[in-house]
Amino acid sequence: MSLGSPLPVAVLGATGSVGQRFVSLLDKHPWFKVVALAASDRSEGKPYAQACRWILSEPMPVWAREMTLLPCTPQAMPEVRIVFSALPSEQAKTLEPEFAAAGFAVCSNASSYRAESDVPLLLPEVNAGHIHLVRHQRLARGWSGCIVTNPNCTSTGLTVTLKALDGAFGVRRAFVVSLQALSGAGYPGVPSLDILDNIIPNINGEEEKVEWEPRKMLGHLNEDSITLSDIQISAHTNRVAVLDGHTVCASVELATPALVEEAVRVLRAYQAPEIARALPSTPNPVIIVREEADRPQPRLDRLTGGGMTTVVGRVRPDPLLTLKFVVLSHNTIRGAAGGSIYNAELLVSEGLL
Ligand SMILES: NC(=O)c1ccc[n+]([C@@H]2O[C@H](COP(=O)([O-])OP(=O)(O)OC[C@H]3O[C@@H](n4cnc5c(N)ncnc54)[C@H](OP(=O)(O)O)[C@@H]3O)[C@@H](O)[C@H]2O)c1
Image (cartoon, rainbow, N blue to C red; front, side, top):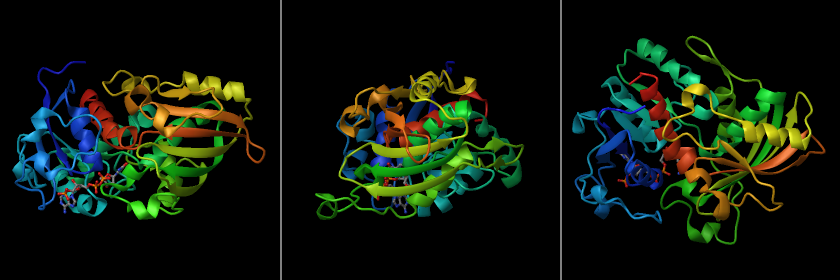
């Protein structure tokens, strides 16, 4: 699919950890052109290069450097069609509906609206069809715009993997332990004296999200809501001294027992639903299964497929449940900005803008 001219988009929370990923990933995007960057009143009115402490290894795009940061209001950016929200959840709660009511499509990373029954919680390679909930959302709320969300960055790779296994064998239960990167805590995030030489065995609210969000994404789409999957998940979430890339160690109970080789074959063959298979951000492949005994590793594997591919390794029998394995997903790319951009591409390709 090619658009006549690129759609004008904006990034809210553009100076933060996820906002910077948006700016970087949207540089030269074939469908979208960034025409506005916005952040808090601490940054408003400043050139992006001055307000933003750039933390990515690739250089800040030249076009972004001199852009003046705007306030996060619909009135400040009337020409924009899609806003990518990298706002803290408290601010997202009030600001995102203002944009949706004013006719903007909001593709959000915040947790504020993920649990609402009429808001799609999307990983297009898992549940692309759920995007059509926005039709009901518009009717129910009287919005000409919409809010579409992506899940927390720990659920991302886990849910992709569960989807593949569930389709082939049925997944009854999963027991998971996360090792989450520092960039997941935003900038400046966890103080260095707390995290160096250390593991922090608690991330506020994260376990509940990892236990619930996959059930919505793996659930069944009805006309105006999602029936949750009955998969049971128990999660432990930990912050570790890794820069980018969330690792999840998972044990799963399958309804139909499967050999390791069968599970690996299913994971490798997994494809996105037809409507999400050929978009600019579609991960290719969706899942890679590594053979080495000591992979995936965040430093070596997080940028597989441009950071959009889910990397699985160490698939082996589990003495308590059926199988165990390790999943790695890039938290600010597949788990945040890249995921939102993929959602926006799906909105456009399904004619929902
Ligand atoms: N980091 C991840 O891996 C990840 C993954 C998935 C989802 N998320 C979610 O994505 C969102 C952003 O996370 P982050 O890690 O990028 O956070 P962050 O680094 O703390 O950045 C927050 C951004 O929001 C802006 N902001 C703060 N208060 C504001 C206000 N009152 N009005 C307007 N803008 C305001 C900040 O602007 P100033 O610079 O002007 O303060 C900054 O641009 C959060 O909801 C988070 O839960 C993050």
